[in-house]
Length: 96
Image (cartoon, rainbow, N blue to C red; front, side):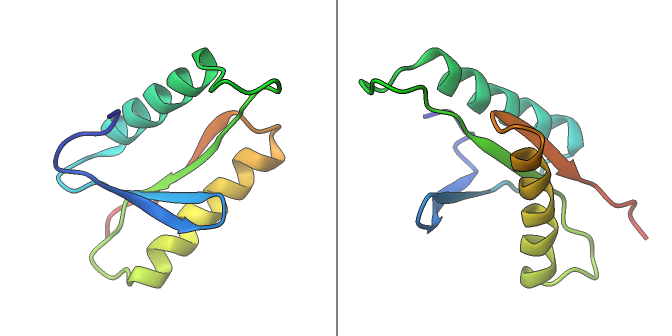
């Protein structure tokens, strides 16, 4: 409910999810990430312990492959986890 209708969201593995956003830019990715962080922070999900999320985002370039895009997003995700979770990090490379 918190991504655009043109985005595709799904489970990537255990506790990891992926959102594929087309026709977007760095600013839009930051807006989506901050919206997701905000929604998780304000919801207790009926659980006794606090739920946090770590987000990693990137934008694919013309020479990227599916694997290279996922690797860039994973690097950003690990940065968020390293920085204490409940945050978003991004791996943006300049277009060639």
